[in-house]
Image (cartoon, rainbow, N blue to C red; front, side):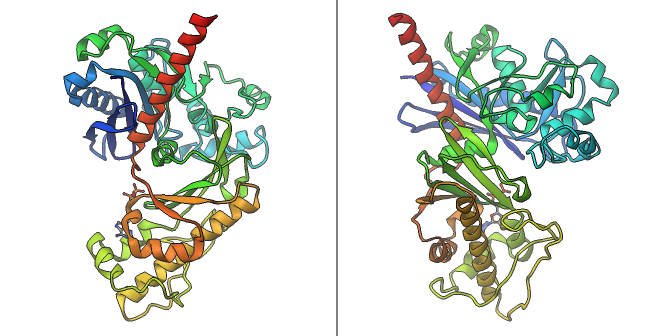
Length: 428
Ligand code: ADP
C-alpha cells in the first residue's frame, strides 16, 4: 500500500489529508492558528509539524509522496540557509501598492502581476526594506514549507509562480522581468506534482516516515480546491460559493483579460480559466446567520423566479463579470418577508454566476458541460435549484471540496511520475 499526503495552508489554519491509491481518504488532520498571529514563520512551522505528528504511525510508514499548497501570493525572503530575513507578506497584504507604478512601466499592459497584492509587486516593495540586503531567495509559502521537508532552496511550481510573472506558456521568466534586475534568486519553476526531492532523513527518522518518501512540487489553495472536485475535462467547472463567488472553467484555450480579473492557470495540457466576483456568501452572512439561511431557504419556491433584481455587494466595486470599481451595491427594494429577500439575493447571485460563465466562454473558453460546487453555499439545495434554471448544465455536488484533498491527489500524481521516471531509467 502506498499512500499520499496533501497539506493545505489556508487562511485560517492548516489541514492534512492522507489518501490511498484509489483516492479514498485514510485519515485527516487539522491545525488552527490564532487569527491575530504575529509570528507567521513560527506559526506555519508549528502547524506543519503538528499535522505530521497527528498522522497515525501505521500510515506514516506507508506515505510515498507529500505535496503542500499555500495561499497564492503569500511570499517571504530568506537568506542562503533558508532562514527568513523578515516577516512574510500574506496573500491579502496590499502595501505593495506603492511599487505598482514602477512595475507598470515595465510589465505588459493588463498583466496579472499588475495588482497591489501580486507576488511581484510585493517583492518590489520588499526590495526597499532594510532587511533586503540579507535576502538571497524569494519563496512562496508552499515553496518554503516544501523546503522544510526536502531541504532544497529556490524551487517553486508554476501555479504559485504565475503571480510572480513567470510565463507559464513558455515555461520561463519573461525578458521584461529580467529587466527589473532583482538582485536575488528567483525560484526555479517546476510543474506541480513533479518530484523535487526525498523527505530529509532527520524528519523521516523523527516522525517515522519511510526512507525515500518523495516531496513533490506544490500548488495554490484555490487550485487545490479545484483539483479536489475531480474535474479534469475541458468544459468542467467549479463554482465556489464561499465568502466570494469564484468561477473556474477548465479549457483547452488560455484566456487572459486583466480588465475583468480573468487569468488562466496551466493545468497540464489544459488551462484553468476563471474570475472572482465580490458578491457571495459574505453578503448573505451580513443579513442572515447560517441557521436562518437554512430555515428561510426551505420557504422559497426555487421554480419561481424572484422579481427582485439585485447586485449584492457589501461595498461598491466589482471586477468580474462587471468590471467597475464604482459599481454600487443594489439591494433595494427590500420585501417585508425575509425569505423573499433571501430569494432575491440567491437569484441575483445565480444570474451573476451565469453571466460570469458566459463571459469566460465568450472570451474563448470551452463550452460549459458540468459545474461542481464548493464552499458554504454548496449544501443549499434551494440555491442549486435556482442556479439550475440559469446555468442549464448539470450541477454536480463535489464529493470532495477540501484543498488538502486536491493536494493529496497532486501528491498521488507524483507517485505516478516517479514510477514513469524509474521505468524510463530501467528501460533506457
Ligand atoms: P470562505 O470563502 O470564507 O472559506 P466558506 O466556503 O466557509 O467561505 O463559506 C462560508 C459562506 O457560506 C458564508 O459567507 C455563509 O454566508 C455561506 N453559507 C453558509 N451556509 C449557507 C447556506 N445554507 N446557504 C447559502 N450560503 C451559506
